Image 1: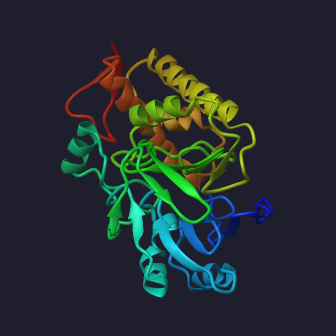
Image 2 (image 1 turned 45 degrees about the vertical axis):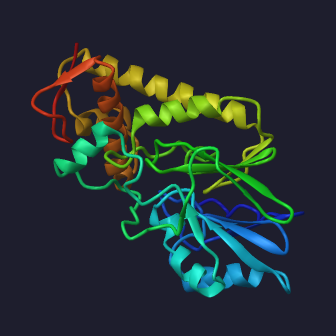
Length: 295
């Protein structure tokens, strides 16, 4: 495991690292405190007593938490929100519940019984207030604009604060995001990346890993990576029909066994996007066990 990222302590911005390192969370979830006096907490993190104590202890004398903002309802980002709200009387704000924002294709898969993906969906999560695309929040010395960026999760938000974007799990520096149907949607993910491919921000602060100092370059690299993976899947299908598991084994030959289920979901997400674009077929309805063919 790499060393934990350095905490941020700058004017109007502090960061804390939750004690939940894993192959999917890297060194742990980053919680951000924005502002002074009346502070916004971004992604309170997992339901961990020590992390709750750390957030409350990070407040300066006389400071209060005015808003609790959750980028998306995976437990490593959202599970502590109810307890932090109870301790501070601050409202919890997010785009919606864990299933919010699913595309019709993903909703159909969920209705057919495809279970949630591997990132730990927080099915109990319910914000006090909903944030839509373009909604703004203000504090004494901060302002945030919510950007709806579905893909990693249908209700994922990035939060823009001037030249800084809190990018949650949509854009991270250490890895590309897991897109795990039916919660994750590759088509939505690519559209959201395209929407962030502009020079509006000086820095991205992700939910895991170090700050991203060249954010547009990182966004473009992620787009290119996914386009390359799609091309590799299409080339593999030229040899004949294949399913997500076989393709993942072929495309990720050196992957740790613990990460293979996430790789299968990622490949399945690409296959579903290719199906939506009418570039592959499958019969009957698509599932994790389906064989896909090039058109």
